[in-house]
Image 1 (cartoon, rainbow, N blue to C red):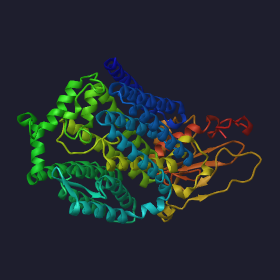
Image 2 (image 1 turned 90 degrees about the vertical axis):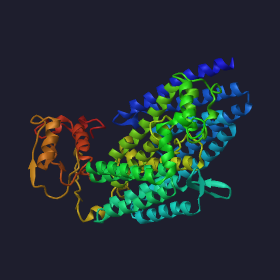
Image 3 (image 1 turned 30 degrees about the vertical axis):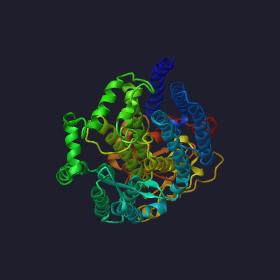
Length: 572
């Protein structure tokens, strides 16, 4: 009976995860994803169902009542924390919250299968880290201050990594952590977040002519300390973070080419200098030559994946404990053995969609500082997943990197939850207002735009509309006097032609009612519509498309006269 339940549960895992990933992919293509809240409710129910199926199976297979009570305790505490989080902040990214919850549940189940005590320890760390991460959105409100602390982030990162290099304990040939009162602490996991803030702060400061040189130089210092500590997995993640953030800042494809060449050269140099790198590469290329010694880890990992097959062996049906460090470095192999390859592919897709959602959020935020942070964190998460799964499946050499939110590890779990706290902070303080459709009057302008940064470059003046019994269709906001003005009608141009005309000729669109002389001016050089600053490179195309679609055709110049009473609330 227990074996039957274990086998049936695997099909349930696959179905639940497939539907969950499908909802993520559907939401990804919504223009305003937060308006489709029924999808997020479905995701929450799927996550609870997944968690319940997992712990019921563990309870039946292990015949240990502790699993039943532990499941109930997890549900109560986690959803209480989520309720507090959503009470403190009126708008959170439910998609990110659900994805974090689902990944945590996968981790709790597989760690509980490997050792009940591991799951308990992981859960305790989760509670503490989740509670701390609730402070992050409040901190992210102070964008102006955070942007000015670039070199403070740099100093913190270098000091933390240097302390490990000088005083850290050697584990498997690398200095990764040091102990504080019996607890192991790995600073490089937290410095991944700090270095993202450091790079973003420097690259955002356009008044500094040496920002590219400074950010590159100090990033190299971070990487060199990790190399000296023989933490090559962390060094690789830091390199990818800087490379992609630099590319996003300068939009130069040569950056990626130079970075790829430099990374290949650095890898070759490490191969010549570090003996443990040579061993890992040798084991990667020829793991079967010494299966009982140097190739034991990777071969056991491959055996586990192959044994599980497409459908998986079922919880407590496999033998993942034969893999060394299965709780940390090879937890994906344990999942593949007992949950199956089909489930493992869906898990990879969940990570992928989460990263894509972070990039999408990055593309839509207005504050360039936030854009760089979200991009850097997305690259960090994606690179970590690639290194972990790639190493366990022999696509790349082993790096000793953990699988985010699933592998056992206090520092890694805490840092990842803090990272998602930063993502939520940016969403709550900036992006959510545009997704949820809050009134612009409720926003504080200084939360989004650094007025000091644009004060010298832009002089935006808001012109108060004249008092009238009839409200005008649009407020008139004029920046500098444009060089050319074109009065374009809806009959004369289609939407695409209009956007092309605007982009090529740097003109102003004037849309007016017949009764009212109020004019909506959209000056391409200033990107100012209704008092909002729109970033020149990233948002003008999407912003204009949205604004022009919201203008009723009858109100384009030359249209039909209509009274305000004829308008519905959305048009007003």
